Length: 484
Ligand SMILES: NC(=O)N[C@H](N)C(=O)O
Ligand SMILES: [Mn+2]
Ligand SMILES: [Mn+2]
Image (tube, rainbow, N blue to C red):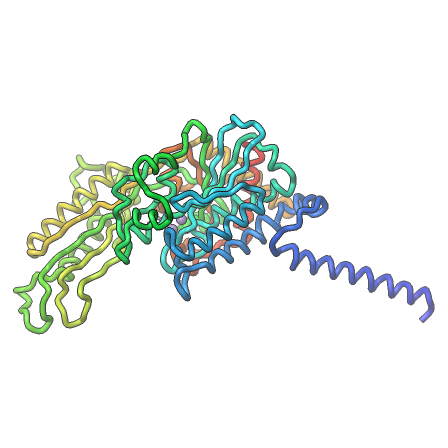
């Protein structure tokens, strides 16, 4: 080989090596934490819709958080549990990496804030919840927290974080699912100043009350102390929450995100049925007061009432349209003493009732209680109904929702600019699921962005959001922050 050929071969191999090293850097280093904040990288990322931060890092964080569980083998992270404390440290580190000032309040909410140069500016709140159901998916809650952190991290990388027009605060709420105490919204209701004091007396499975748990957390939850945690509505501009849709509509429409118009109201009851405990082999059937058989009848009644409410309710109570979307669920049941050869002494089950129209929900609860007591009387078992939670339906603010929709539109067009596709109209949809936005609506105007999920499945470990849809959520928040 002559020296010119040797030189050509050398220069070809060294440039290939540089390209290979660059690709390796992009694929391995560029996708891991922390993200390098160099100007060159930031420029490159702007061109690519900040894919490294808004998609790859965000998905990595969701997966990391999805491994922090109170149980082995499945995801469960409840209010102020050991796993929630580990998750708190991680979320704080991510918020700080995004350039935010952080703190944890006595109810376990994590806050990350950036102040605007104008100290008298009002504040945009962004957030969702960090607690999960039992055997949960990893997107329900964390998607909203992490898309907000990622969007602010982009602004930190580009240097825009210091020139925001409003203060911006992310809150990772400590309890939305209400699994530990059947409470829901413990975190967000305190911030909005609407936590009913009786919630402090609710007990978990070990007999601890909410109040006990807070006192172990060095916080005495008196009425005054709780009110001190309430935010001043005058200082808050609005609240935006990103959340997995948890239903099939966006997938059906072939759209990655949609804007929420309203959230159905919800009530949770605890029904206790007391009978006569006895021997399964000796008590004749007609002499039993069996709370298990009674509960079975009550549960079938609930299903009938919610499937065909018009058969149970007089038209003066409600009209057909106000009952549209009514859904009722018994999701938890336990009996005592729970043995195959014992007629139970007591059965306890939960009832979850949801519908957009608040009056219709009240009418359903009234009918349901009436029918339950009639059945219990006929079966000579004792029934009590505790109404543990009520949240009225919430309509999202139309102006804020429009701004969110415009942000989604421009964000999606950045993502699709490579393909030349123009994003269609952003869909609007209703939420049957509850959200922290319901509690925060008592404080300020709210808007929500839903993100498509596979098969519409949530509250299940198979819950899944495409990485590109996580990206779509992040770029929507980024565009919102840039234009607010
Ligand atoms: N979005 C949700 O999954 N939230 C609730 N905790 C619910 O029960 O709807
Ligand atoms: Mn949930
Ligand atoms: Mn949720």
